[in-house]
Picture (cartoon, rainbow, N blue to C red):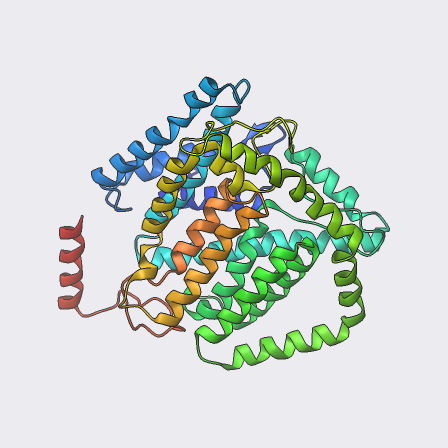
Length: 429
């Protein structure tokens, strides 16, 4: 007799996190998988509030924030700067982003789940990177174009992935979740041992991350990843694995130097730069005027300026995402989101923590948020995972002074110590 398959609560939540990273969009052949998993995750967390430290105060605050954010939906209809359901769609985008980051903070409420979450994210980013590597290998073996493979992915997931015709140099292949790559580099280099990732797996993931970053052809990702790698190197002691990294990078760079220089020259050529930067410059003046027209409360979620429309469907989306958002929710809404971000990353300001680790985390967070001035990456479910991954790396948990390369301690302690721990957990619920 077949036994029924039982799916754990944690597994449902982890499946949603994986979908946010691996799936290029929410839909597969018209079925919105992410939305289904998002609802399932909310139900899973709600069914075990004590397990995830979901208190009545926390839940109430989340509901009040959502209600407050929704106030900018009717404002959009009052100002007449939006059409149809665009305000509701934009509200959904922002709400899902903040909710995903919030769910991450609940899920990693203990050290073991925190390590499991970071390990899960690193493996999922490794999967997306491997998809790129396999696509390039298949294209090289069959003589097909990587662009054609990207178009197939677009058709299956109803998405329009970022790509660029490179004149035979390679192919730009960028997933929405590529924003996780720099933070993933830092997690591997600065915290690898704590998350139970072996040295061999860490090297393999690093190779995949490097390849994925290169073929993204994003100058921002190149710079952000370089800074994250440098911070990861200096945050902890120089060990044997880091020496292997340095040697591996040196040998790879020397072997592929000619190819890398060609790729860099093509990406920074006048024609390519003028194309990408021209789009931003075209939006800049119109969006500044858009902000100036309603500086206090903005025009409302889902609004846009008719002078420049970047997306024919999501007309409220712009390359200069933060500038557009200020025009949509004004100084009041921006201040509310800013305070929310500061509260979310409050662990950075804890004086008991390592200055080097807190400073590194603060730099990574600042660069990530500043990306909104150049790229539309800050509002999506995968962006919520990026916010959550940065949150999980902020040294704001117990275990102060725990060695950076030590795995989470097991629960095999003496009976008396175990009893004390259980009492603490019970009283803290």
